[in-house]
Image 1 (cartoon, rainbow, N blue to C red):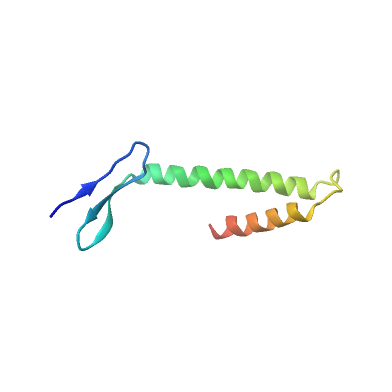
Image 2 (image 1 turned 30 degrees about the vertical axis):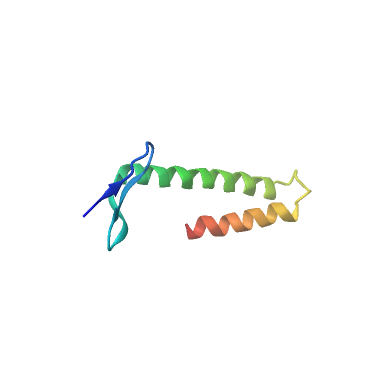
Length: 81
C-alpha cells in the first residue's frame, strides 16, 4: 500500500490518496478551521451591514437596482451560510 501525502504551507487540512478509497482527509486543525470560518462570516457581515446602511440612508436617494440585488443576494447567502 502506497500513501502519497502533500502538505503545502498554509493548508487547513491534510489529505492522502489511498488506493481503493480515493482521496481521504487524514488530519485537520479544528481551531484553525473555526477561526477561518468565523473570520469569513464576520467579514461578510461587515460588508452586508455597510451595504444595508448605504441602501436605507435617507441622504442617498440614488438606490440602484444593482445595489439592491447585491444586498438581497448577500442577505440570502448570509442567512444560509
